[in-house]
Image (tube, rainbow, N blue to C red):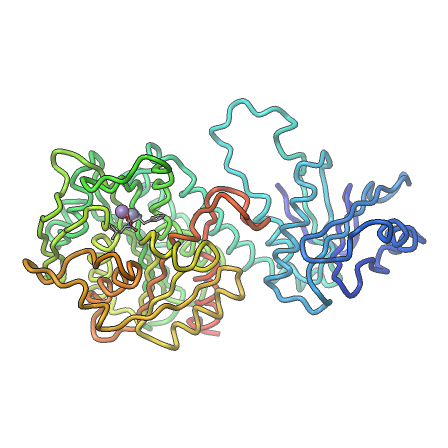
Length: 484
Ligand code: BES
Ligand code: MN
Ligand code: ZN
């Protein structure tokens, strides 16, 4: 798909933004004299009133100009937020992708609508060998039509980078677990050196020397070697970096504490936190962000095996703290605790954010519309909350406290890796907090409910994997961690 920006209409279909206060725009007359009046009459006969997500199609018979006009509703008034413009762009693209037409113009005041269109145009069909032409999208070009082309083009540089990071996160998550495992995943991350990112990959031998036994224990039942990949982007000055840490469990069977069969295939997405970090690093490099950011991902596969870790095993983490593994399905925190510790020991970051598909319990708490946010820092929490609202990737903060922390007490080791039936997402966060040094500003984002979804999807989220994360992190950095 090609994405362009122009100030005139040239495509097969013209898509106009409308809203409830003005759902048949006078702008239609720019396409054909008297068109607004004709469309108005047709619209009034039906139910289209410019509500967000509603659309209305009108065919034109003249030889020149577009063959069809589509009005797409975007909100209550002309005062639309960027997030609403993005959703509008998604609805607009969805209306034409498989229509048979090859090119479409979307008229909108900012390139954010084009970002929404590109998010909606994403496909993951590389393993579909039998698609007929009718099952493939017809659309080849989407053009943003806007009055100020140069402003929109400048805006598009950053937006296209953010969408590219999202696309990468989606690709990584959608890949099947026989293709994307810790070894092949590390290879894909190594390819990011082309973007100017410094990549280091540690294997089991190096991680053993470092004492990362919590992470290594999770991967010890897998025939694939566990890896930790580190991506450094140095666009800032000498300041300490922001550290982004991701859970990269390429497949989570639960291990010896085996998960039930139904829907276990979804656990290929248990590397969603790492995909968010990798995608964000790509975005930062593509737009040459003026910030120092280091991304660290723990890549493992959690398998049942003769060599797999057992419930009751005690491991000594890199921090020196011992952990009784009471449930091998609570593996994400075991991976993260060592990567978090490594990040702090080696980078002394100014702040640290981890993302993980950590608990099923967060889906019980928040459903699929907000990621769970846990933090030791109010400022970082508000920055993330604002970034989420701006990017349609919202987070909702949940409480922490010493009464929850007590639930991790073990009779054999410094802690156990599960709390109990109550407050499962919070006890997971409390576990991670034990590996944060000296009140370093830290946020943990539990994305188990938002990383993938099969029902009630936004138009900008067309595949199984949402690609949640890169845009949230990019916005956080752009608004708070970047030198002007
Ligand atoms: N990867 C899962 C969490 C998960 C569940 C992600 C559903 C996405 C959808 C995690 O490793 C896990 O298994 N967590 C356990 C923790 C429990 C054993 C304390 C869970 O949520 O059941
Ligand atoms: Mn698990
Ligand atoms: Zn998991």
